[in-house]
Amino acid sequence: MREGAGALREDAIPADIKRARELIDDDPAASMTLAELAELCGLSHFRFLRAFSKATGLTPHAYLMQRRIHEARRLIAAGTSLAEAAFASGFSDQSHMTRLFVRNFGVSPGAYAAATG
Image 1 (tube, rainbow, N blue to C red):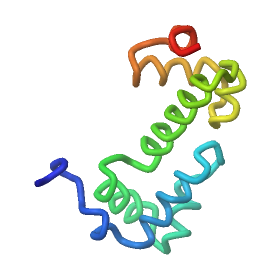
Image 2: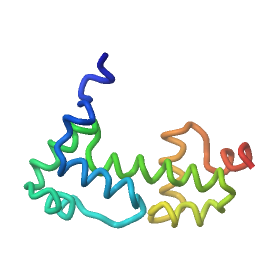
Image 3: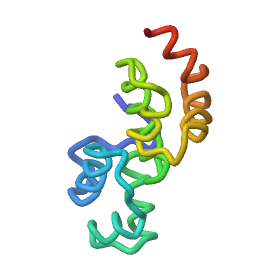
Protein backbone atom coordinates (compact mmCIF):
# COMPACT_ATOMS: atom_id res chain seq x y z
CA MET A 1 0.00 0.00 0.00
CA ARG A 2 1.39 3.43 -0.98
CA GLU A 3 1.43 6.22 1.56
CA GLY A 4 1.57 9.00 -1.00
CA ALA A 5 2.37 9.74 -4.60
CA GLY A 6 5.93 10.92 -3.88
CA ALA A 7 6.62 8.87 -0.77
CA LEU A 8 9.47 6.37 -0.73
CA ARG A 9 9.79 3.47 1.64
CA GLU A 10 12.11 4.27 4.54
CA ASP A 11 14.69 1.71 3.41
CA ALA A 12 14.72 3.26 -0.09
CA ILE A 13 15.82 6.67 1.20
CA PRO A 14 19.54 7.27 0.53
CA ALA A 15 21.70 7.20 3.67
CA ASP A 16 22.99 10.74 3.17
CA ILE A 17 19.43 12.11 2.91
CA LYS A 18 18.47 10.17 6.06
CA ARG A 19 21.46 11.75 7.80
CA ALA A 20 20.37 15.26 6.77
CA ARG A 21 16.80 14.57 7.87
CA GLU A 22 18.00 13.21 11.21
CA LEU A 23 20.14 16.32 11.71
CA ILE A 24 17.02 18.45 11.29
CA ASP A 25 14.95 16.12 13.49
CA ASP A 26 17.56 16.12 16.28
CA ASP A 27 17.66 19.90 16.62
CA PRO A 28 15.04 21.78 14.59
CA ALA A 29 15.99 25.03 16.34
CA ALA A 30 19.54 24.89 14.98
CA SER A 31 20.46 27.29 12.24
CA MET A 32 21.37 25.31 9.14
CA THR A 33 21.60 26.31 5.53
CA LEU A 34 20.88 24.46 2.34
CA ALA A 35 24.59 24.70 1.53
CA GLU A 36 25.56 23.06 4.84
CA LEU A 37 23.08 20.21 4.40
CA ALA A 38 24.12 19.67 0.77
CA GLU A 39 27.79 19.60 1.78
CA LEU A 40 27.01 17.06 4.52
CA CYS A 41 25.49 14.83 1.83
CA GLY A 42 28.27 15.49 -0.67
CA LEU A 43 25.80 16.80 -3.23
CA SER A 44 25.33 20.05 -5.10
CA HIS A 45 22.57 22.34 -3.80
CA PHE A 46 20.27 21.35 -6.65
CA ARG A 47 20.85 17.60 -6.42
CA PHE A 48 20.38 17.70 -2.65
CA LEU A 49 17.17 19.72 -2.98
CA ARG A 50 15.72 17.26 -5.51
CA ALA A 51 16.83 14.17 -3.54
CA PHE A 52 15.50 15.50 -0.22
CA SER A 53 12.18 16.51 -1.79
CA LYS A 54 11.81 13.11 -3.41
CA ALA A 55 12.57 11.30 -0.14
CA THR A 56 10.41 13.40 2.20
CA GLY A 57 7.83 15.04 -0.02
CA LEU A 58 8.98 18.44 1.23
CA THR A 59 11.81 20.81 0.48
CA PRO A 60 14.46 20.99 3.22
CA HIS A 61 13.13 24.39 4.32
CA ALA A 62 9.51 23.22 4.46
CA TYR A 63 10.61 20.13 6.41
CA LEU A 64 12.57 22.29 8.85
CA MET A 65 9.61 24.64 9.38
CA GLN A 66 7.30 21.66 9.93
CA ARG A 67 9.65 20.26 12.58
CA ARG A 68 9.93 23.68 14.26
CA ILE A 69 6.18 24.25 14.42
CA HIS A 70 5.60 20.78 15.89
CA GLU A 71 8.29 21.48 18.49
CA ALA A 72 6.61 24.79 19.33
CA ARG A 73 3.25 23.01 19.74
CA ARG A 74 4.87 20.48 22.08
CA LEU A 75 6.45 23.24 24.18
CA ILE A 76 3.21 25.25 24.36
CA ALA A 77 1.28 22.15 25.46
CA ALA A 78 3.90 21.66 28.19
CA GLY A 79 3.16 25.15 29.54
CA THR A 80 6.06 27.11 28.01
CA SER A 81 5.30 30.78 27.33
CA LEU A 82 4.64 31.66 23.70
CA ALA A 83 7.73 33.85 23.39
CA GLU A 84 9.94 31.19 24.95
CA ALA A 85 8.40 28.46 22.75
CA ALA A 86 9.10 30.57 19.65
CA PHE A 87 12.71 31.14 20.68
CA ALA A 88 13.34 27.53 21.75
CA SER A 89 11.84 26.21 18.50
CA GLY A 90 14.17 28.30 16.36
CA PHE A 91 11.78 30.96 15.08
CA SER A 92 13.11 34.45 14.56
CA ASP A 93 10.22 35.92 16.56
CA GLN A 94 6.84 35.08 18.06
CA SER A 95 4.87 36.51 15.13
CA HIS A 96 6.68 34.17 12.70
CA MET A 97 5.74 31.21 14.89
CA THR A 98 2.16 32.46 15.15
CA ARG A 99 1.72 32.76 11.37
CA LEU A 100 2.95 29.20 10.81
CA PHE A 101 1.03 27.85 13.79
CA VAL A 102 -2.27 29.22 12.50
CA ARG A 103 -1.51 28.02 8.97
CA ASN A 104 -0.70 24.50 10.17
CA PHE A 105 -3.14 23.96 13.01
CA GLY A 106 -5.97 26.43 12.30
CA VAL A 107 -5.80 28.02 15.73
CA SER A 108 -3.56 30.64 17.29
CA PRO A 109 -0.84 29.56 19.74
CA GLY A 110 -2.61 31.51 22.49
CA ALA A 111 -5.89 29.68 21.90
CA TYR A 112 -4.02 26.38 21.77
CA ALA A 113 -2.27 27.19 25.07
CA ALA A 114 -5.59 28.06 26.70
CA ALA A 115 -7.18 24.85 25.45
CA THR A 116 -4.33 22.63 26.63
CA GLY A 117 -3.51 24.42 29.86
